[in-house]
Length: 117
Image (cartoon, rainbow, N blue to C red; front, side, top):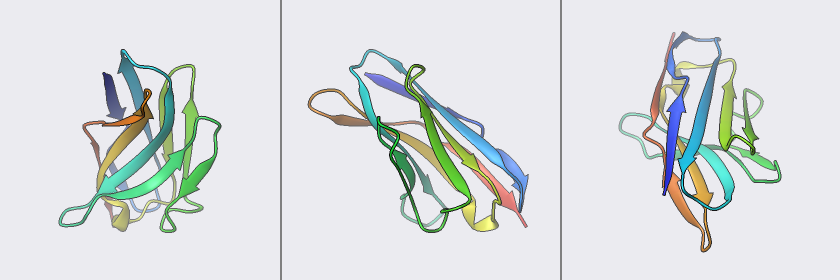
C-alpha cells in the first residue's frame, strides 16, 4: 500500500506562487509515473502535470509556462511549483502515483489551493 500526503496548499493573491509537495510512504515497489490533478467545484478532475521516473514531463495547456513539476526519486516525493497563479487555478489539487507490478495507482487526499483576484 502507498500513502500519498500532499502539502503546500493555501490562499494566495493572483500573480502569486505556491509550491505543492506530495510524499509517498508505505510498503510498495518502485514508483513509476507521478502526477498532479485538480478538481474545481462543479467540474471534473483534470490532469495538471505529470512526470515519469526518468524525468519526462507533460503539462496541461492551461498551466504550460507557469507550473513546473519535479520529483526526488530518493525521497519518493513529487513537487508542483505554481507561479503566476490565476483565480481559475482555484481547486483541490491531488497527487497520483503509479507503482507496483502490475502497475496500480494511488491518490492522495488533496490540498486546497485558492487564488483571490
